[in-house]
Length: 173
Figure 1: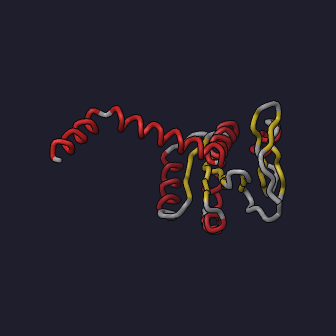
Figure 2: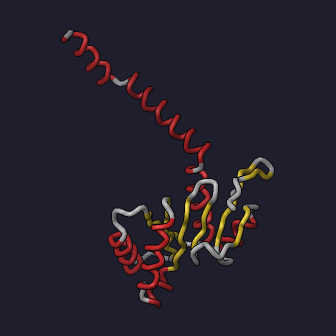
């Protein structure tokens, strides 16, 4: 069963579910995140339980070697299972071949809930996943929504255009 995030020394950590050990999972463990292995998790994917975010990790060089058709099937299954899904395409350098691959994947899954993000290394991958998981978990997303509403209200209140429109409306009455 999924367990909520917990606190270590005042720093929020997460429970992450994965299928097999990976450099990314080892990095998460070193940062004191709970990493749980599960046979029900798609190979190459990581699920952050508190936020419900799922990441599918793929190395572009591996996709070039295998042709990618099997991977596209796995990706299709992945996005059908996970509402909030991200595909992290890893390459040391994102050259024309890698960008073309990313474009083809985005085109194939256009209109789906899959977001494709290029990453370069394990450290960047972990930082990105933790940032997305953190800002999409319930306490943080509510705080962000509140701040956005307050910013919107403040912009409207202090907007000269809004004041002019309000004055025009009063003059018409």
